[in-house]
Image (cartoon, rainbow, N blue to C red; front, top):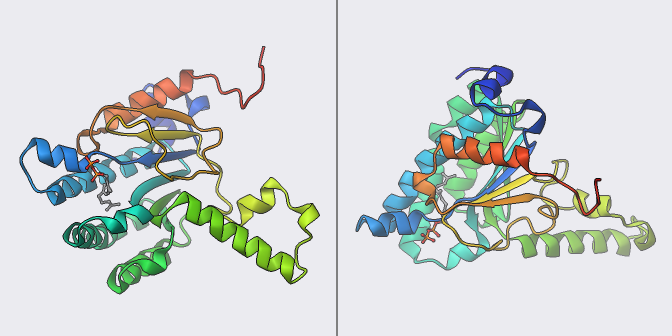
Length: 250
Ligand code: FPP
């Protein structure tokens, strides 16, 4: 892989001034992809993992700073046990197989969510990959694992309230920055762009605070069919959007 973002941006026909810093993705449609082929849902997730590889590389190539992927939600624990176990196995496989490439490409792995709920072998793989990539400065691959936006907000309130009760924080001085600093995404820029595959017009408890001003792009493409080309087309369309942040610009 080339480590020349400017060259890759030009080759892709993207506007270098309009590359989002943080892209968040709801990777939906693995089950439908498998069903269409009369295959087990798990095979849809396996194919989805290939798309993850492609989109991680494509993001790194053009110099995205943070890529957040919604890999497993708090609600996903309620899926059939066999599917949950298969997803955990895939996750562990991914963390092992991609480790070397992450190191080579200066990608830092991070996870957000109630990762303590993950099986021990997955947590171990996660910790190992996080440890090995901790110093990398190229891109943060931020996996949402056992993640729920309302849980994140609830935990943030608990931790601020705890500090207030101990007298460490004066409630009158709490600002939006205080809130942001107590979320899982502390220190990261908010997503500029949120992509959801497979056509659903929902936020599904994803980054409820952080997506306040993100541009949304929803594609009918099922996640396993999503490609680098379509990703870059969305980035081109993002570059043409006018972001007003609630203001009048002209
Ligand atoms: C949604 O499709 C997808 C998920 C719940 C899991 C996402 C997992 C992957 C893309 C593969 C593994 C990921 C990593 C990072 C290794 P769905 O099952 O809800 O699809 P459906 O709505 O068509 O049923």
